[in-house]
Length: 331
Image (cartoon, helix red, strand yellow):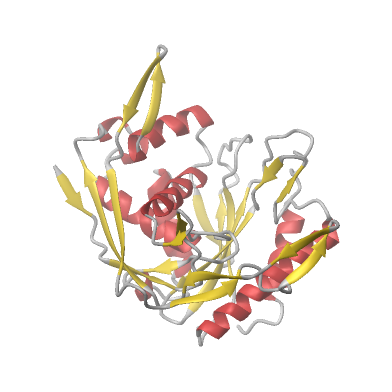
């Protein structure tokens, strides 16, 4: 039995650098990756092993029991098709605060414009659930829940908290739906809390001073990233392509400034000595009734390499990063 998720199309609201085999194209694998990662960071109570077992049942993958490997098909099917092919395609530099060429660490760096899907681009999306691919009764978060509503909530939450393609943690590749466009800014924190709690199956997130926070009583895991807090920025009321690009330039400049100030990359991430640490602040954009709202998702910062894993006090840098971006923005 297959059931369709009631979402017909999505609209791009920030430059999307999504590629397959070097060509610009909508990628359903990236969209599924965003959805899976959103589920992962929304569940602070589950340890890595339990979380992975749940993920395999929800999104497909390999499971291993008694040395026997089983490959499970994903019950979630995604198709992402370009509406009006070739339209709303432009070129833009990946890092808007950099010149076209510059010297860094004695090496010539290039910042040429890349093809991208521009704001206003529409994609058709076909999302469906194959009930024969998984035993939903064994999945903790789906106890007493309808899988269709749970996957719909997870999809909408994913579009609020992230994007797809290159530099998706810096506000690129964000999308919206007709359902999200009906949300008002005053309702957005409560709606995000409801989505989070539905996705993780427990009332562990709450609204505090217009921010989404994790309840202090929640038992948290310490060896992987999870959502600690979500903040909402000042609305881009005009929300033109120019306004969005100006905002993204501020994000890029703030990344540069915060690295110069702190030097340890707790908020912005790094790649050095063959180690990679993804940014612990995800910057995304959500389009609602009043315009486009910046969304800042603050994660528990963890680096696998112990040499760099001194991020227990990352909050100061995370807040400073957001403050630099929001400074001077209209309320």
